[in-house]
Length: 172
Image (cartoon, rainbow, N blue to C red; front, side, top):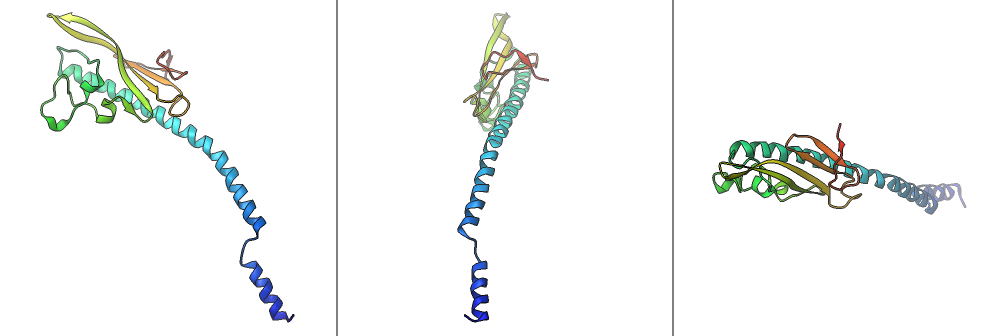
């Protein structure tokens, strides 16, 4: 074999990867992916929980506006009443047009929202809601969120570390 034939054979082998090199690279990529997936899930849960807290604050503000717009009713016990299409005309107590559709439907970013524990008083022969609690619970505990959250008419947000609606821990 001549020197030029040896150089071209060596040069040809250097242009590609060996099977062993490819297997090592693929193994490293798989290890990195296995490390990244749990972190991605934790980040997604944290994002959903943050969204749930922000949504509770949005609903609280909508309740304050609702009570100001419809003082004879007080607050509402229905998320749907806080929603409504802004193109449908003047806001009403059953369609106040204060929340966007996804939040008014009670489902957003892996959490389910409900208004519960409504208390009423009778003023001039009309029932007026003067207390409520808004609850946000994960649709799948451990997947869409770990904690449940609650807020009341006093704007105090508490959490349930088990993902339910027994909110006893204050958020700091």
